[in-house]
Length: 161
Image (cartoon, rainbow, N blue to C red; front, side, top):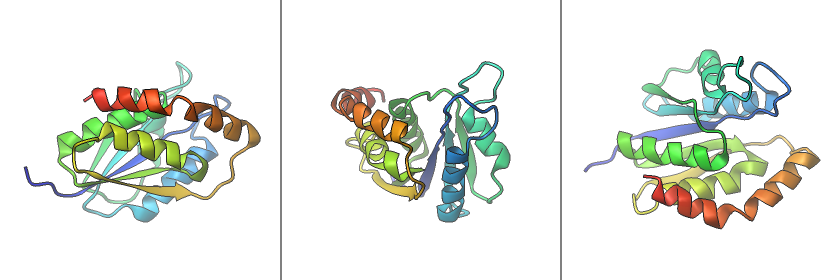
C-alpha cells in the first residue's frame, strides 16, 4: 500500500473545573493550527469529563478554523493511552506516512512514546509538536507517576490494532 499524507493528532485536556475548552487544550489547538497544512487530516481526541459537557474532541472541532482535508473526532479517548490507540487506528485506516502528535511540552514525550507503540511495525513516522506552557506542580507529579505505567501501556497500545 502506498502511504500519503499526514495525520495531525491534537490531544485534549481537561482538569474537570471548566465546562468549555480548558486553556491548556486551547493552547494545543493553537499549536495545531500552526503546523496543520491544507492537505492534512486533523484528529481531535478527548472525552467529556462531565456528562453534560461536550467531549473535548467536539469542543476543539467547534473552534477550529483552519482549512484541512478532513477532520476526525475521537470522542472516547479518556487517557493518553486511549489517545494513542485512537491515533494508531486512524493512521492505519487513513494510510498516512506521518503522525504529528500535538500536546503540551510536559506531556509530549510520554504521548509520543505511546503513539509510537500504537503504530509499531507500521512504518509511520511519529513527530511531536508541543506547546510551550509550563506544567503546574500537580501536572508534573502526575506525569512523573504516569511514566511508571508506560511499558505496560505501550504493550496495550501496540496490541489494540
